[in-house]
Image (cartoon, rainbow, N blue to C red):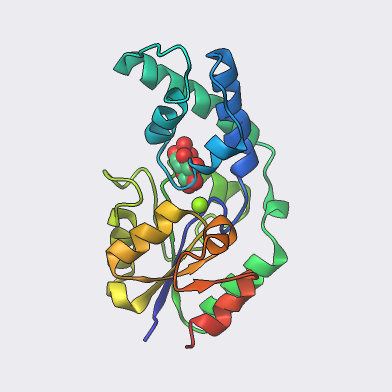
Length: 214
Ligand code: BG6
Ligand code: MG
């Protein structure tokens, strides 16, 4: 029996893809590293430092970076990114997502965020969902990023439910793998759904209301 739903944030509750893309693009351009949507797709669900490693790997020059330089680049990307996040508002939360969340809550499901992002708190505040979820487990609470199951197991623990009582909602392949590793079923949206990942592939977010009752 399903008692809880754990939502990824970026690409599930709201769309921040274009801001991540713009911020990484700026860094890649400064370093003269080729960067496009294909590389950006590989960054979905992956931590900031791992994303940077993927970008640096595209470099044609073979230039090596020290840990301190990498830290500085990641910090700089995050500054660009947070500047872009400032334009987000409750208008970035779709009615469909909002109504589905409210209906899950009305049916007494426990709901949590399970995100790799260290900016989850800021984003939730921007879109008007600060304090809405029963638990928020994000990049600030974990050691290992998706596809490791840590973020989802911590969210389940915070909700006081067992993994098999949870459904994860994910848009990233790394996230569907993390859900599987956590022993949780997964409803895929967006890119992950297009890849046929997860136990269900949703075209519409509201399909979740049927899935939890299956
Ligand atoms: C994930 C995004 O939610 O968070 C990734 O899908 C991102 O693209 C990761 O790299 C880490 O985000 P942040 O906000 O901590 O840099
Ligand atoms: Mg995501």
